[in-house]
Structure formats: structure tokens, C-alpha cells
Image (cartoon, rainbow, N blue to C red; front, side):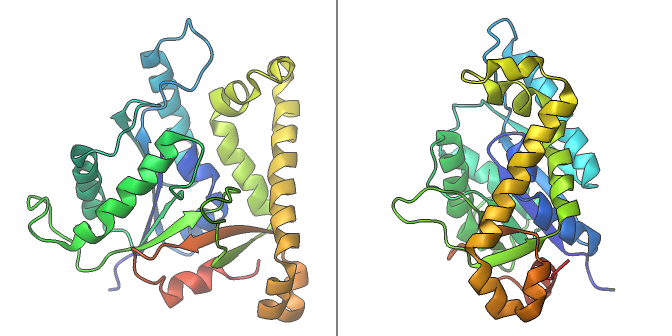
Length: 273
């Protein structure tokens, strides 16, 4: 019996691993892959409420992450590295090596090291620093090494220096799947319906939740449609007349530090819905 394929999405905070890649993750889950989500930090700094303790926020964000994970039928782990203080250390690298080895993913998703947030950059660096060492027997010898480095993909961003994100893989995403991504994001209420409004849109905090969700949906649909339009020529070249059916897309850059994505992965990821 063939072993179930696995994908691991690694983010810096408890709303990164799912909300950037919900379209691809849900596609793979429906195709029988096992999905795992990981936040490397505890999310304990993501608020402007000075009367809310770090411990209170940490527990809230773990609960919100678990709710999102349930929608994806996935385990969502949150590590204890403090939010806003993540460093690229040997201890953190070896923690990640052991975690990845135990799960044995075929594909890892994460962000690029080009980013405004130090935690985002450092998670990407930790993943890349761990990549080759996953296969080295004498490193973290207490945890069985991997025979091959997983494929590593970077989800999309808008940063231009030192180079823009490269859309090596374009994942068609249906309108219904974008709605599902909004559901995932809505699980993280303390982020998307409070923290994200600070400090320039504080009036939105008092909006009814339905109105807040509608604005979030407008953002998700708008971004996906814009990316779809930007890559319309490539989509037409690849899919021909079927390209007209593509409503939205997610974009992924292939890291040189991992193996090439498998044909099975690409068949699922690039399928038109």
C-alpha cells in the first residue's frame, strides 16, 4: 500500500501557515494528502491591547489556530518561541530539523527570507538552513534522518529586493475555494477583526462580524483575481481555452534548496477547478 503523501506549511505566526496557502492545502487534502500546519512563534505579541497578557493572547491564538486546522482536517502546532523575538539559532534549527524529520513531509511551504517582519525572515532562514541537514545522519542523530530533502516552496509576496517573487507554480483556485480561504482567515478573529485594523481603521472594530467578513472576502477575492489577470497570458499558454474557467490563483516559488516537486503534486496543484 502506497504511503500517504504529506505537506507541511510552516509560518512564523498562528495565522500564516493556513491563510497564505489555503487554496493549495485544501486541494491536496481533498486529493488524499495529509496536511500539517506549524507556527514557529506563539503569537503572543499580536495585539495593541496593553491590558491583555502575553499568556492570554498565546492561548487565544492557539485556540484560533486549532479551529482553522479543523477546517482543513489538519493538526496545527504552535511552538513556544516568543512572537517578535525569533532568532536564527542552532537550537531553533535543530528543533525544526527534528520536527520535520518526525513528520516526513513530501513538500514544505513557507515564506521567502525577503520580508518586512523579522519573524517571517527568520522562519524562512531556519527552514533553508535545516533543508540539507535533514538528510545528514550525524546531525540530530536521535531522530531518524530523511533520505531526501522535501520540495520547498515559497508562497507569494510583493517584495521586490533583492528580487521579486518568482511564480514558478501557478495554482488555479475556484471561487468556492477562495471563500474557504476566507473561512480559514476568519478563525483568527483577534488578528483579522482587531489587530489588522490598528491603528488606521479602528472604527471597523465595532462593525458587525458579517460586515468585517465581507470586507475580508473582498480583499481575498480581489487579490486572487488580480494575480489571475497578471498571469493570464501564461495561463492561456498552459491551459488553452480552459484558462477562461480559472477564477483565482495562488503563486509559489520553488526553493533551490529542496528537491523538485513531484509530478503527482503538480498534477493536483495545477488542476483547473
